[in-house]
Image (cartoon, rainbow, N blue to C red):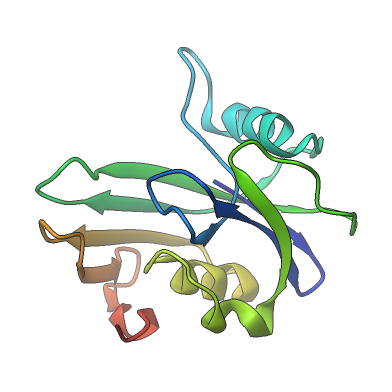
Length: 155
């Protein structure tokens, strides 16, 4: 995943497809055979937005596990870009969202913690555990052992 930022605003994707349909997420995707994560970050950003980014900065890793088919390992990158009109994206609608709006929009339950770490410039390795209904049960920063569930918005 690539967090695209300009100052205190993020260019986020309101996803049209599952998973996370209707929620605001960074752009991103899956690795192709033989591809390094940073190469995938650059390629996926270009494919989804048309924006060419310089090599992005690795901010952390997110591991999501559940007893159902929702298991991901995500490298989270940051790319600071100039402000521009949100381009077309076949994955949904791209929109600029200010950092003050993040708690007022629908996001995956892990993302508020991710933005907080990114804003502070602090590396993270998050472990997110879900139940069968995809309710987030546990969110821990494995680098510090800190419980991060306080970032999860109330239902």
